[in-house]
Image 1: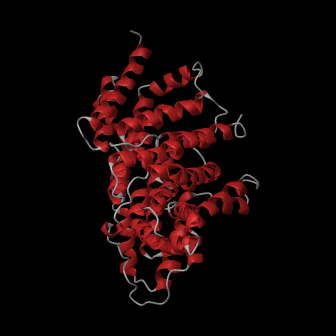
Image 2 (image 1 turned 135 degrees about the horizontal axis):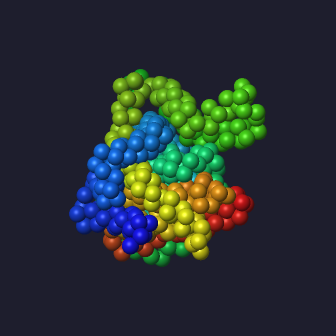
Image 3 (image 1 turned 135 degrees about the vertical axis):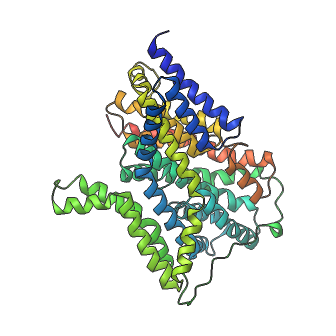
Length: 452
């Protein structure tokens, strides 16, 4: 057996072992990724010292760009939710509109609210609002709840600073501002289709209406220490939109100014996800926090509460970087690159397929992206005209495909909305599968205008 074939088989075996460790042995994804990466290095003959060193280097490389971005995005979302800014956005969007417009309004509000925060946290915080709106309008809970989930998951699946797309941006060397712009171009129409349109179509499958009196108890935000005024809708909206707008301005500005000039330096700062998010956090600190009467201790608790779920995600992202580094150290990434030019599968479709298969097997979009980027990254070298931003979106959209019983989001949706497993498949699983397929279609369509 040739050395090249042997290394390719070792790489495939590492992915299989990763899947088995998570699905059968029930190991935490961080441990499973670490064991798979280290096992690959040792099996390929790198030696213990070099294997650990490559893993540590990959771990650090993955987190040096993703860690600050995810951390600042989570803090921003924590202040937005804890100060009542998110609730204010949702309330203004819903208002006293006719019942038929509620799915559209809640999808738009959720798309905005979900931009700076993790799906699970935003979902849990906004579920009481779903119950309240359903009671007020006399509608089925899913008539409000399904479009909410659709809007939140578009942001979670396609737009930085969420973990999956942020990791892919780092792994592929993509531009964050362009990724957000392309993600919005693709994501907004898909939000309309998977939100209000799917809700209308799938309403025949909703089944018996849940008992709205048995819903979750609203998780109240802390009262301001010195109440001044409620959260402003305009300021909450600015808080959400500030990071993507700054990054888009930076992306356009740097491409139209001379490198080394003062305007270029300013636009380059705006193009940084860290600086843009930090500016938004500082703005939210004053505009939504101190302005509304929240004390420094309360704001610290809001930020800390949001950061709680991030620890495990950061470890997973780092370990995914370690696996990617091991594929490079063993030469597997070069082999993939060399063979890729002869494959008849388009690279964007291949990226989606790899991520989708891992998602179906592993259940976690973040873990699927972390594992897929190591396999997919060599495609950039094999296809010089390939847009790394579209590769990010292809991978991230594949990683939301066919959520089922091995995904924590599946059970979160089921339990909070009091659904049966069959109802959850007919709504949640259908919605995410539709989003994934439509996102792939959007990426392939956009690729005809972007890149070579």
